[in-house]
Amino acid sequence: MRMLFFAVSGAIGVAIGVSAAPWFDSSILGGPVSGAALTTAPLVYGAAAVGAVASVLAFVLRKRRLGGVAVLASVAAFTALAMSWLHLPDVAAGVVSAEAIARLGDTRPHTAPGFWLTAAGALVLGIGALGQLAGAGSYRRRHRYLRVSQLWNGSVVRQNLLAEPEDVRVGTDVASIRREKPAFALPAGAGPNDHALFEARFDKSLGRGDGSYELALLPGFTGALNLGGQSVTPKDAWTAAASAGSGDVRHLRVGGDDWGKLDFGDVSIVFQFVHPGAMPATGRFGLDTWLGTSAAMAVVALLGFASYLCWTFDPSYGDYEFRKQDKRA
Image (cartoon, rainbow, N blue to C red; front, top):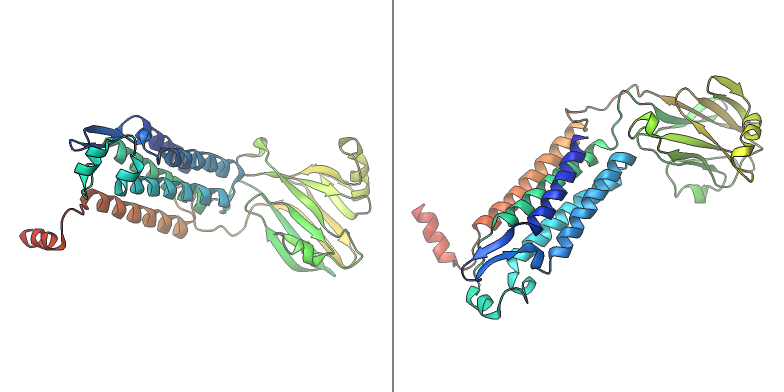
């Protein structure tokens, strides 16, 4: 939740920095220049909006990819900010007079509070997004997660514990299901060619990110199910779900203490919802310790260094003048 707050607050800061305060203030330019008037403004607004939406969806769906999208959005906002400063004559066409741009020459204008508020917002957005990226795939002690095991002649040959809600496919068409993860291959002739056995569903009653699943049954399935504390056969469960769907595939919501075993010839698929026994190292904010710490340090260092360069760099100085300044210092 804290990382989502950081990300959304950063996106709001970016939007306020663009629209509510000037980016540049120089007597050469004839007065303050608002970021909203520059041609890069739509890119900055768009990056802030994408970052905020992706962060909210990453929080709700616990999808690591969406955290990555928010990180890229923060980088895009910073890139647009740097482009505005380095190429002001190009992005301020029609806003600043040609005479003022000519007077500006090779120097860079003085940055105003709006510029740094936008930069700070992009930094906070990046930190929040990286936090979500680091914590999206970690297990939480209070939640249960779907564990799917594949047995061959009674021995476990493969097992998946899903930290993120994902569809689980089974089928005899190995080439088709191999493109999906997670997926389990079945013996030829022992089951459907390609079938989504579990479909992820977000359930607010089960807590944020702890999605429930729908078990998609076909009439020919055999095995044993325990749903809501009641033992039933797949055939009986399929029949009971007839009013809830149409066609051969019938869906049942599963979660909590539900478990089951579906037989496909010599192969069985066993599922249950478990508390993970081995927990990855997590820090104060629920992040994977090493990934979260290293990601946060990296973004702070890189964006801080970029901000320092923007603050101190002035191309109107030549190499000799820089060396003279260093010597005097």
